[in-house]
Image 1 (tube, helix red, strand yellow):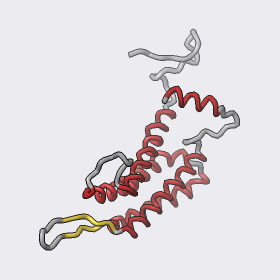
Image 2 (cartoon, rainbow, N blue to C red):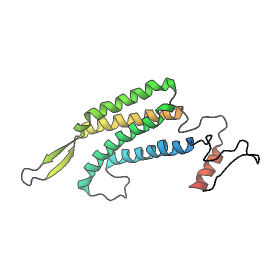
Image 3 (spheres, rainbow, N blue to C red):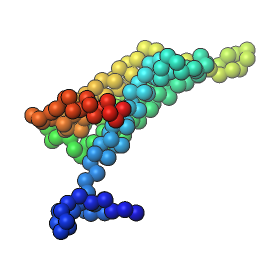
Image 4 (cartoon, helix red, strand yellow):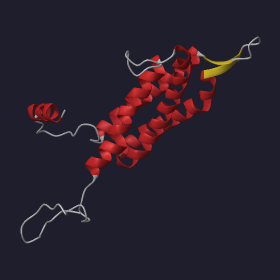
Length: 179
């Protein structure tokens, strides 16, 4: 295993993956916040349409199950995201985070009403039906939680770093170079 280090030749101020000074905040932010935000957007799209995109081929009889599962996954991702970032949210935003937790809990308490099983009396086949009105209320609350959480994450510099010296041209060239 190579020991990548940054510092001067004397070893003073050397930082390596094995040192206590190694900062993993970039990795943490990407894995524990960024990845979940991407997943959340995918689940939001599937909850609304039953597919990630127009090209995804899903049998029509599976659309309802996918929408219901995606709504449950939205709720889970929001809880996970709040748990992963709660410690870094500014104290004045703690009330906001607690409010988001409460809104999620309220949706969780009534999630059973988003869908119901329908049994065909003749064939005894069981199919799932969505209570669209209830589903959309839960969906809209969770989407609102996501939007409000994004604001708190941004205030905590976990989405965009707020500084006076932002070089948008450099950011764009980095994005283009790194794909």
